[in-house]
Image (tube, rainbow, N blue to C red; front, side):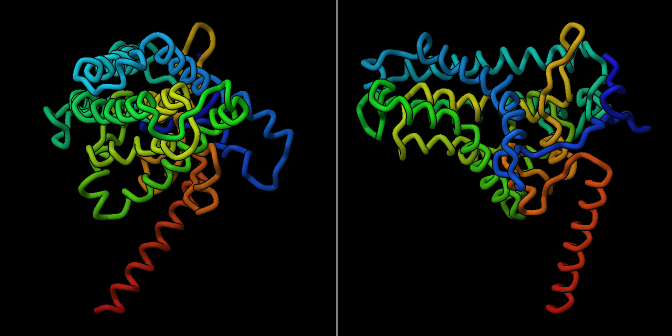
Length: 337
């Protein structure tokens, strides 16, 4: 594919799409019904449909029986960790091998023209972004993900919490399933904005932001405190009526879905076409740090003035906001001196 038919590349080799990013229309005003209808396929396809399919596969075929889950035991806990690890290794590993090791499509559609492996850095363990990110994923991220899953499945098996079934409350559970990605988006914005507070950023979130040029393994490369916060969106299943199938879907949206914003390419080429990744909004956050705290499904950043649509006009608006912030900090320091 010719990526220059879809965007431009600067003299540094960095590519950006020609079309500006758009926030989801569900709560963007003035509200237009037709725009929402046109947006709905992109809300479900490809990612959320894939996450639901994977969640269903795990629930119906790869989750221990209720009788087993009623008693905590290292056997099934370790099994869930290995199952989740295999899933991440398969998906993240496949993307990493194709796009970053084999470089099968070169730097076509790549936001940052450089490849992390070509630029060792002391900020990473073993001076390797890939090794550092993978270790943090499997040593911290996946154990904490699995711990949340163990807690919920054990609670369900023992009847603790407002669990229900599709035969009892089909309408509610379908409606809940439809809004789980939106719940994740709101929660992600809140905890993400929290860990950008200077002291938390320095000691916690900076670990993730070390990967300025992210790749799939960067997706779950976080400080353990951030991992705990990141998966806490799933606690809603102990508050409102839910079902384990929806829990596993939610964990896929949060866990496996982290890769969506870290692929580093706008399209993954397939045959004569390409699969849209929807990765650009979060890539801009890694590049500029103080924009796009959410992913744009809901217009939260737009409401709060932190949205960047990827255009040069967006660059200028960001610079004005940064300059205003610096001037305010300088004035405050002068008043206190």
